[in-house]
Length: 171
Image (tube, rainbow, N blue to C red):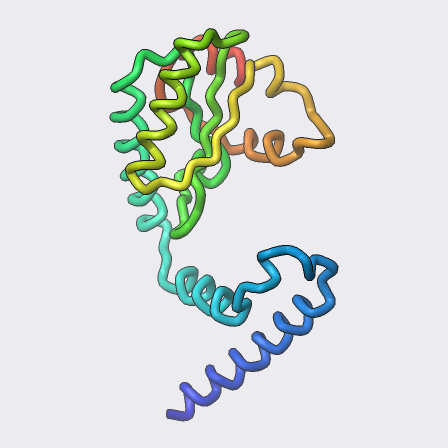
């Protein structure tokens, strides 16, 4: 019982800090500011405490199976690359699945429909997909307005499609 009280006291202190930080944040008009921060933080802490490398790897492998099966259903003119945490095979609970779809140039309307069908299939399977479509050359340029893409490319791995396009990215 003493441990529980101690843990509760620590949690109350943490939640007070989170509430204080949230109150000082300039984003009061944002819908995020209306979320119960204490509950969200507590859930994240509990998830991280019980999560291990084999679990994040297993989750990534399961997502790989879904992505590859969906990719095989469509004749896609793109190369699928896992990036970010998904690329590292460290997919945490509630994480989005970061996919880079490499293309060699403009995509015609029929190919766009197939890519849309692929992404719809992933959404319908329950995955939270965060996708971007770029050429290898576009990925090699650092855009100040899109640092998220540049950072996510630090952890990437080939999934399916034209392997030579992936080699262009990695060279």
